[in-house]
Length: 420
Ligand code: EPZ
Image (cartoon, rainbow, N blue to C red; front, top):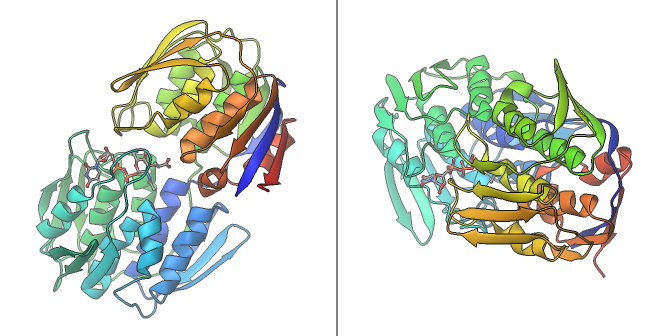
């Protein structure tokens, strides 16, 4: 397992390009199962999760190639059962369930395991598919679904903490080939859902209201191949913006969508980060006095849970107490203990983390636990003087394209080392 060796305490300076969105591309790749024709997806980030999804789609019988950020996919003939071992290992693969069921009338996928950020139930996915007249039964940890032609229906997809992103994606995709009209109430409004809708519409789907809590999908008999360019990764952009602010650097992020990050940019401004937004670029400027802020994570357009850990790292710089409350997942503070090894003082009180910032920090060896927690540890390592070693950075490779190269291009002293 690889580690990052970071010599921290240096400001990041320069320009980087934001890659395509991991959380947009995974459901979009699954959506190609809805047609037997060829689809071409551009600006696909070179991530282990993307290649993993490619393996899963190949195990279902699809042709999948990835070259220089372009994926060419054709699901001519499909098996109803993918490689269970693969499917079980990546939560995002649950979004093959809807398209597979809609295309071939049956689908079997393994229940996604829980993960370090909490249990990852799929009750809302199954509620939605049942509403579309699918028969679902769970046996030995696998979901077995079957249906004649799916039937359009009204379905409320709100859960205990609000909408479900991949649940919305699953039902949306299934509904495109259902008979009649499907109305999804309490649909997720994330930009990744809107991007998926744009791709489905390019394939011939009839979808209105994507990006709003009420989505209406009118089923069609078949979908055709399409080409699509994936939106920029808003969480990657948030991560580098916070790394720039944490190191008092001057960094311009290119090929990004500031409108997808309104809550994050608003919170960073409140924290004293100086920035200039210009079209598809965002420039983070040095010299801002970072102050403590409070935030609760919420469904879009609120502050995203996927940027929570990174903000916690930035708050280590802010004198005084900041409070970060995690409202989406039940245990997404794994990074707090590791940040404490760098000298952070963070108290966890139920769903809230209370950060006493402005304390002296120094480098240490830390362990990554999940994708965004790893990013927080890298930000902290860049920020504090001395050497920080972040272990198990395979977590980072799942969701950040070439992070070490991008950081080095900004002047950071980061080296990827193979664990002995
Ligand atoms: C997506 O996961 C993202 N992953 C996550 O990003 C992100 O944190 C999450 O949405 C929330 O924004 C991908 O898009 C691949 P949810 P998803 O269903 O769809 C509960 C990252 O770091 N829930 O929106 O799996 C669930 O327990 C990853 O890039 C149910 O109760 O998340 C959670 O509390 C991590 N029943 C809340 O809803 C269900 O059937 C939101 O989960 C489904 C979800």
